[in-house]
Image (spheres, rainbow, N blue to C red):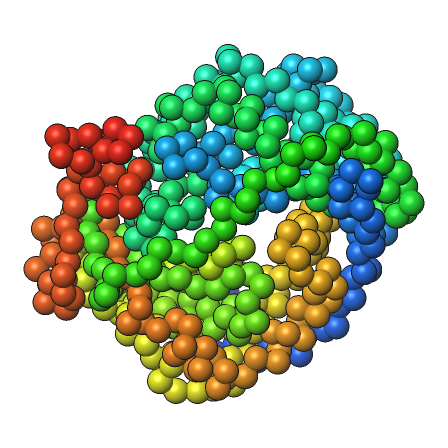
Length: 505
């Protein structure tokens, strides 16, 4: 009995200690209320990429990553969604999606089996300004992998059955995306900022434009833009530069350069803004939340203000501790998260600040986005705020370059925009050199809140009255009247848009 009583007493004593410890303030254990400041960034030196140009005009770049036993090859075409014809939005994306669906030598299953047999992977996609196919394997298998890469890029067959299958998959995926307030708000934002200029339409098309795409449209785009003097081949990994250049010559050296010149560039800036701010509401009656976007034109990738721009964006909305997230989520509890993106392209890309909130607070959140963007230019950013935001940028960049895939992709991007390939080694220095007063100046001159537009997709009856008190000239478009095929965003009289309208149910 005494032993049992002692054990019971001991158990009770330990339990009391546990409860007491659990109820004690966190600071009683010596923990800080705020995390310690980030340590100074460590210097990073990647091998400088080396390059040569083949006789057919193909630019070949090699970057070494010794000791990884892995290799990646990416073939990049220097055009993407911006070359889509006005009524065929999504054509560039559809074209690159069909490259791996059959060639003169291999069927779609045979391509997949060949890559799988190498223990590798193949990826593809179209973006604004580029289309790319990437293969990744062990270094010892890079030769057959590059042969497959060459085959799918140069000799696709674009069979009708594969086209129809891809078309249906794309339409199904797009229909799902259009039912999401956040994604729909982004599509509308592109039309508001860029109108009918090349960046205005959805990169992956609309249900109406995808239905219009024919095999001859795809074949024409491929024969026009998929050519060696409009391409960049980047190879990286655990191999020698001589071997990489021999691979390029073996599988791409006989790629004939057409005698005709490339089409004149379709590059042009966003359409001239109308006077005043646009506030566009898409009334989605069934929406459980409202998506709120503040948007305007931003920067070209080659802009001298690029590094000032990305640091400014990091302070505003580039992470959990950014101003937007702290103000909208942490302080007010109006959203699970808020952030911003400065998307740079060949021409000026968009700046977007975005969040989702309950429908009733849509107007309040729109005002907060405007206020926080305007506040950037009202005072110098203190180092206590700037230092961790720079550290976040540098850390994210370092993670991108940890893998050979990420390193190749970064080098390919620099090459696409005609930038120095050694920027992979100067990135940290360039970010660190940005000062608080430079952010204040940049925000006032390049991201003026007065030049920004507001888009809200949600149940308008819950926020419209409040929104009209805060903003002038609010435009309301019913969900079934929306037409993403046109800069007007509205179906033509009679219920048909420029390409049949985009009715979302």
